[in-house]
Length: 226
Ligand SMILES: Nc1ncnc2c1ncn2[C@@H]1O[C@H](COP(=O)(O)OP(=O)(O)OP(=O)(O)O)[C@@H](O)[C@H]1O
Ligand SMILES: [Mg+2]
Image (tube, rainbow, N blue to C red; front, side, top):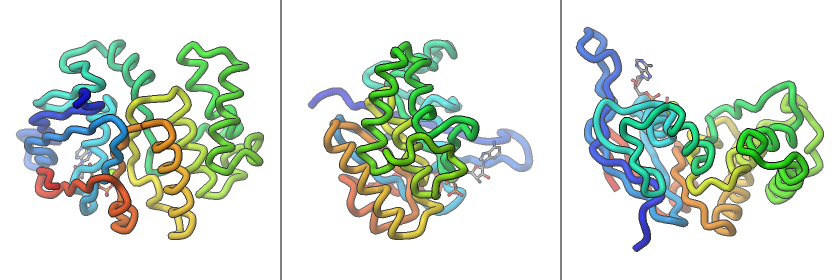
């Protein structure tokens, strides 16, 4: 077995600890994702999916427990070290696309590559290739506001994959799309994942989509069950 791409052990997170409004969201989460595995995370609203994904993606820190990405233990690492690993190894897709409104679709996919030291020409080639693979190449020169919800979400996937991360984390990426569009976006993502050996953890409310992934994890009462 190769090293897990993502490994979480004994992760705990409480909001407003010690205050009357204390929320114990995660209470000992263990989770491993192997190279090439696509895993669904299903849970009711408020169960802690976003919290878990933000911790896994180094956007937030747990109160206890360890996060390892591609074998590197991130516990106690500086912000700078966390940012470097996040940029190189992790792609994140938010529930709402979070594309930069003043830039075109292609530019949104180019920018993270420039931040990672890729040349403008290479970054542009890669952006157009990714957009083509998810069927939105014809929209490359349009700004997000001129795109449909499904197109925006496909561009957001391309942005997350721009730097060829090992791990993709997606927070209900098709939650605000109609079923047909959601299927189309999901198919594009699965094709890309299978082609590139990407590992992914994808939060979804959609049980039909969850069933098509390699494994389904359920988060409830602060714990995970297979
Ligand atoms: N910054 C915060 N401060 C206090 N409580 C928070 C904070 N962020 C989240 N929570 C609480 O933690 C719990 C889990 O929130 P989280 O956003 O992780 O859930 P979720 O499963 O993603 O829900 P949804 O499906 O609605 O997106 C909720 O009860 C929420 O109110
Ligand atoms: Mg959420």
